[in-house]
Length: 145
Image (cartoon, rainbow, N blue to C red):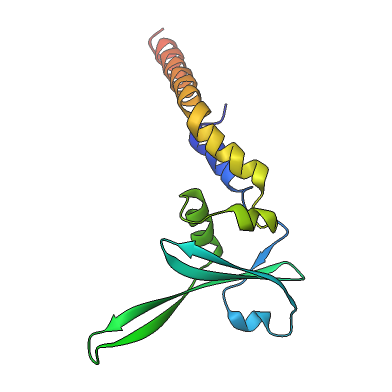
């Protein structure tokens, strides 16, 4: 039997569509046709998600900061890689409706992940712990016989 952590890891690996290629540099989009772009909000900070026709995704957030030296505004760009993107999805930092519509997020795996957390994790953890206790019992029994 798989541990609850292993099950969650397996489900999490299916949340992002396998058809999508995530890139870390805007330069890799050059020459490609942008099929869609979505403005998403990450804790109130806008981010732009570009999706090309060959299913390549690039995500970048832009936020303003105040420069203490000249009391003016400054804008910072922040690239969001695939691992950070998945983390944000799982922690519900991003509204996922638009990215599910685009096929970037597998809706079945997304719903399965949160359903598993709500309902199954506690049950599976108890089963797993009982199974581990029984294995330890058998090992000790065998050792002392």
